[in-house]
Structures are given as structure tokens and as C-alpha cells.
Amino acid sequence: MDVVVHLAGKGNWKVDFEGTRRLLEAAQEAGVSHLVFISIVGIEKVPYALSKAKLASEDLIEHSGIPWSILRATQFHYLIDVVLNFLTRLPLVALVPTDLPLQPIAEEEVARRLVEIVQAGPSGRVPDIGGPQILTSGELSRIWLKQRGMHRAILPLWLPGKMARAMRQGGNTCPVAWQNGPRHAPGGQYLPSTGDRHNKLGSLAPAALSRRDEHGGRKNTCHSMSSSDK
Image (cartoon, rainbow, N blue to C red):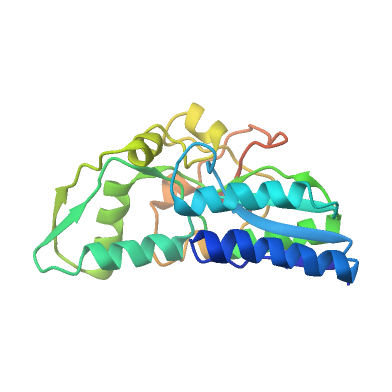
């Protein structure tokens, strides 16, 4: 077997870590020559169950003896859609943490990048990938509600704890994008599909999405998708 692309995950230690360990054992027996793993941006900064499992799984892969590539991505549109569906179940009002910076990316973009990594061969930690724009959770909530014609009064919800504090500091976004400010994610080299403009969140401000600067990606830094890269 030439390549295994490891995309499985459930957010708990038994499935994510133990599953990865068993997969690696099977891959070693099968003589796999390249293992590709999808991970999450900021897992060493934002402490929660899934990030700990992903970080431990990365370590297993790196010391497995199997040639490997690891791609970290920011939040999928699907995840944000699921969360906002849950937070807006009540009529009239929605309790939403409004101050968390997020950098959603279309699943199609991540899939395309994974294909490129498979074709390129073992590459180690490749540059992280993130969406074209960093928005707060409050801004995303208002966009999401508008696209669905839903009317809710957003009541800001303050989240305590280390995880929320790390997120407020941009720990779950691509480092270069955060250093340039919450609205200036760098343009990446990867061609986007229509996924980042026509996604479950709806249109994310076309003018902002079309913004592009000339920052290049470095090893372990973020490649952000911009609609002007088409």
C-alpha cells in the first residue's frame, strides 16, 4: 500500500489517539510508504479534549518510522454551521460567545490541499491552511442569521477558562493572519474553489474575501484562501 490519508476522528481520546495507534501498527505491517494526517491549527495553544488527542496523535505519527505529512487546518464551515444551529434553537434570542476570533475554511479547499500533499510525497509538517478572513464569532453569527432570514437578538455569552482565553488571543487561527490583524489573512498559493464564497455560512462579505496581500507562506505558517486567487 502506498498512501494512507488519516481523516478519522471523534473528539475523544479512545477513538482519536488509540485509533491512530492501531492504524499506525496496521500501516507498518502493510508497508505503507506515506501517511497523511489532518490536524487542527493551534492545538498546542488551545487546550481541549480533541486538541490533546490530535497533538498526541501527531507525536505518534512523527515517531512511527513511517514517512509522513501533517496538515493543520482552521475551522470547517460545517462545524460553525452545526454550532450556530444549536445556539439558535430558542426563539427570539441566541446566547452566543461573540468575542472569539474564527477563521473558517471550506472543506473543499482542505480536500484539494490533501490531494496535493499525497501527490507531493512525504513532506513532514506542511504549512497550516486557513480561511480567507478572521471574523469574530459574533460577526459570523450575524452573517449566518441574515443568510437564513432568521431574527434573533444576540446576547453575548462570556466563556471563562483557559480554552476561551487562548481562543480570544487567536490561538485557533493561523499565526501570520493573526499577527496582521483580525481582518488581514494573507493570500495563499492554493487555488480556491467556490466553496469559500458559497458555503453553509452564506456570503462572507465579498469585498473582504477578495482582499489579497503578498505575504508568502513559510514552513509551518498559514496559507489562507482568497477568492481573488482564482
